Length: 109
Length: 114
Figure 1 (cartoon, each protein chain N blue to C red):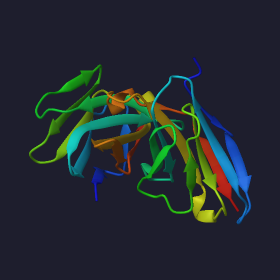
Figure 2 (cartoon, chains in turn purple, brown; figure 1 turned 60 degrees about the vertical axis):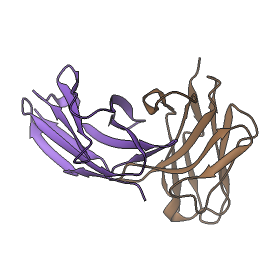
Figure 3 (cartoon, each protein chain N blue to C red; figure 1 turned 45 degrees about the vertical axis):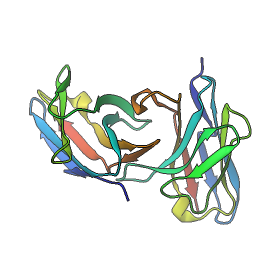
């Protein structure tokens, strides 16, 4: 059975802090790992990672995949209150997507 | 282009009642998915379809049935609702040959079963 585990499950920080969110996985026939941001509605796509060691970056967010150790991290630097959300990690195998539980990030002013 | 729409947006049911959630997409996508999301959890796949007339079970199919009679519509049915089915339901679709980063989500249906 495919499994995706995220940590921590929740995190409270102050504006300006840097955070690292973790995602580990055990899936058969791994194809890609995706990160989403969810703010009280449908998830919004952030990154898709398929190759180890290649960092994907978008503004203050970045992510990297380690296919040997089966994990990924999502970094957010200089956090802002607008970064408060649930961050979901998901892994694709075949035609299905398996999600982790998500990390609830709260950024306080 | 409406994208993926879901009907209804909210619904309250009593235990034992039945209902159907409708997902519609106007992008001519072959693949469609039904997920549920409970508090503190990620999305879990209920059923999916890779084309008109075909459906398959996902991770948590028990208590649900689906139908894909038309390519643009994917219906999720609850024959006898239970409180454990209280959840937010998301539908999604994508084209074959595309990656999941090109999956489009609907806005969700919030279902409460009393």
